[in-house]
View 1 (tube, rainbow, N blue to C red):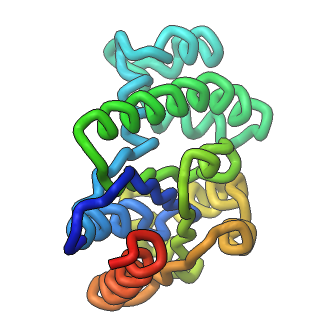
View 2: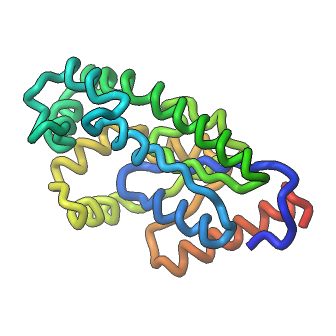
Length: 209
């Protein structure tokens, strides 16, 4: 944990391909550094709920067939957008502006409470341009077979998982752009050890502690 209070907010952007463990890493930063986490996927899911900010626009764009009992069925929507780059781009054009605005709003609210480490958990951090909100970016990586095994445990089929991965930037591109890398292909203890080491480096480099 930080031994002295921060003088200003410090924002870490975390990204990575499907099932690399971005949220796990973000949670560990919360535990080790007392960071406040903003989860972009969670913001998007809320926006898709009935009465959510993007609900009507998405239904208008993709039709009432994506509805189930008055709510957007995310599996039906996923089946549509991950079969067509154009349709995925259309969905992103609806969701991304909202998620970016909400992320900025949450950052502003956190800042009002005083200096804090803020973690942005964003799958499309670089693609969406949200890396510009961060002081430091981290790419989380894991082997493809580990990613697929995690997807299967989460209820995705192998073909669904592979299709979604193909629609994302290659892991190598995230790694090339990021300031730091975390390998989340091992045990939780191994991942936490990397986070502790990075946090120690950040404290010395940025906070002079």
